[in-house]
Image (cartoon, rainbow, N blue to C red; front, side, top):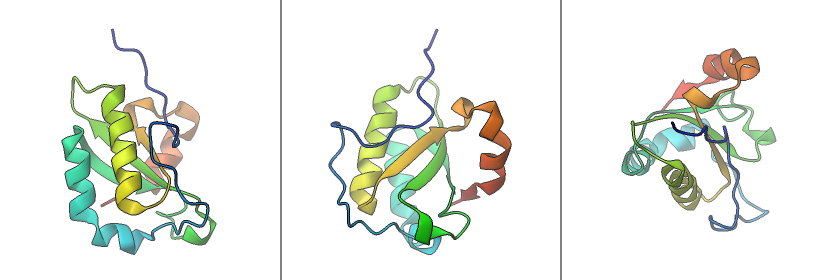
Length: 119
C-alpha cells in the first residue's frame, strides 16, 4: 500500500535555491514554455499538467510561486515528484509547488479544480 504523498512540497535542500528577487512567470509565459514543461513532466511520469492559484487567475503580481496540478502514472514515487519540482524550478527560475489531483484536500478540491487551467 502506497503512503500518501504530501499534497505540496516547497523547495528544500533537494532543489536549487531560488533567488529572493525571482520573477514569477505569467500564464502567457507558461503557455509559451508549454512544450518544455510538458516534456519535463513526462520524464517524471506526470501528465495532465495544469496551473492553478494566482498565476491561473491572472493575479501574478501577488504570486510568490507557480502552483501546478498533475496526475502521475501508476508506479511513480515521491522521487518523481521531487525531481519534477526541481526540474520545473530550474526551467522556470522560480519556486513551484506541485500537487497531485489525488492528494487534494476535500476542503480545497473544488476551488483548485475550478481554478485549474490546462497548459
